[in-house]
Length: 337
Image (cartoon, rainbow, N blue to C red):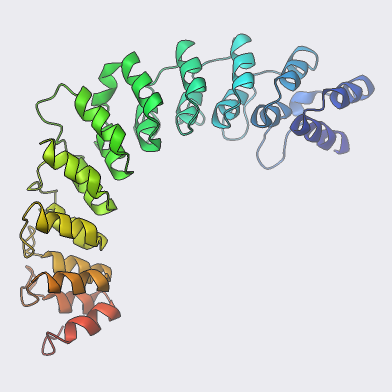
């Protein structure tokens, strides 16, 4: 037990001479020297810490398999890619390791690399055969992940390698444009829309949500403005529940988005969803008192009822949103549940 801990500690510190001394003295099966909770071997540790000479020693003199997986199915290449250790990635690939192993049938090294900002590793993996089209259990591929992180260099590179990545959809129908809009990456949004050959990029996911809707509820007004001005998305779109962007802005309590939609898109503050919920209903249901106050100041009608016959005050009471109840009672004191 003590020797195992020494081996793992030396791998984490890059101490090849310590490893050599232990090997000369003990002749252990180092493939069995792993952390009890994670199954990480000395190879995993060295890959994360960035010690290619340790990898070389453990493999070529210690006899360790470079394909050894931990309890999550993660191999040394996963760790090297995730922690941006280029020299370790380079060594592992030079030894012929599998380029696209799936961690628990879920994440490849390229996917993990795309969650970081190191485009050198992404390019190196792709140049050695890593596929950006492989998908994890949620249907996300490496391109989705790159769009989420917002590195223009990585997104451009992958798109140049395979333009069809633009049409990627996750299992719930979300596109890279949805992802970039939701996470506030304006330059990525521009790149994706400029490269698309579709007549419209106003695609909906399985809930009927568009990229514009994602930008609105996340408060990314600059992206919403670009999508509208470039005629990529329509502010009149509705999701599967018949809600428009103004509903989603109110539900999120996002005042900048509300003002953008009212002032620049001239949306109706009392627009009904399929169940006749108005933006005021949704803000009250979520407990966004500041947004409720703002909508009232923007002439939201608190007397309007949804399909269940409830005003915004009634909805606030149903959902125990005390701050909204107190605010709305000032204008609708006679409403009851």
